[in-house]
Structures are given as structure tokens and as C-alpha cells.
Length: 198
Image (cartoon, one colour):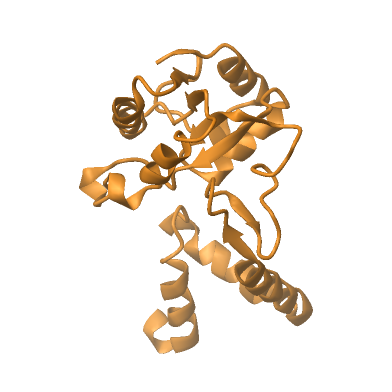
């Protein structure tokens, strides 16, 4: 039936390329966009295009920042530049920021090592992290998700940095297999404030 509606077929094909969008929700999302009035749809598309045009990854920490502006984290003089919290993704950084209990800087890896998905250390910003530790960095906090991939990535980073800086990780209390972005603020706050040596 859908093959008789080429515009809808093309739209669904594009939506299928959005990661984390469950296939059971494709039709709901498509209907949501089709039901939007023209002005709202135009505003949505403009916001998406503007974000793509005006945001880029920081060359130091790999977090999103506005083009032509300094990073909100790397150049904040109120932050402890000697402590770096390493996270897999930008949304994990946001989860830690929401606690209000961390005052250091960040490093966003862009994922975790997963050979089955073709993601090795080279696809992540691990080498950039190693280069950062050659400055005035005193401590690296490994705040990766407690999944097999996150644990493997933490072990790999620890092996590369052992003996050069203090390496700590989040305290236990985060459920194994959980993602930081879905944790409540208190759990994340306790995990970051009660971190332990790796």
C-alpha cells in the first residue's frame, strides 16, 4: 500500500535512518509531522537547519558549542580545569550537569568501543583525551555507562593513562546496563561525588 504513496514512502525511509527511533514509532512520528500546520513544520525545519549550521564540536572536549564562540565548559574560569570527566555522549554530560555537583570539565568520547558495531578506539576521541592529559590535568573521572562496552572502554582508557594521572570512576549505585541520561539527578550526583579509584 505504501509503495503507492511515494512521498510517504520516502519520508519513512528517511525516518528509518534516525538512530534510537523505534520502528514501531515510525508511523506515529510520520503522522505527527504530516498533521503539523505549515508554519509549525517550517519552524521545526528551520530550527534543525539552524542547529546544524551553527553548532560544532569543541576541538578540546568534543562537546557541542556554537560556531565562532568558545566552549561553555573548557573556557569557564569557575571550573576546575585539572579534573576531566569522561563521558560517552553529550546527553551523559547533561545528566551530570543537572546534578549541580560537578565543577570540573568534560571530555565526550562519541560512543564506546564495540567491535561488533565496527567501533574501535580510532573512531572515538580517546587519542585527543590522551593528548589533554599532557597538560595540567590531575584527575580523569571515567563516567561511562556501566555496560560491557562502557566497561571495556574504561579499561582501555585506564590502560593508556595509568601512571600519568589519577584515574577514578563513578561510585557503585548506578544499575549495571543503565545509561546516564535516564538516571535521576540524585543517583547521578551520588555516583559522581562518591567516585572511587578505578
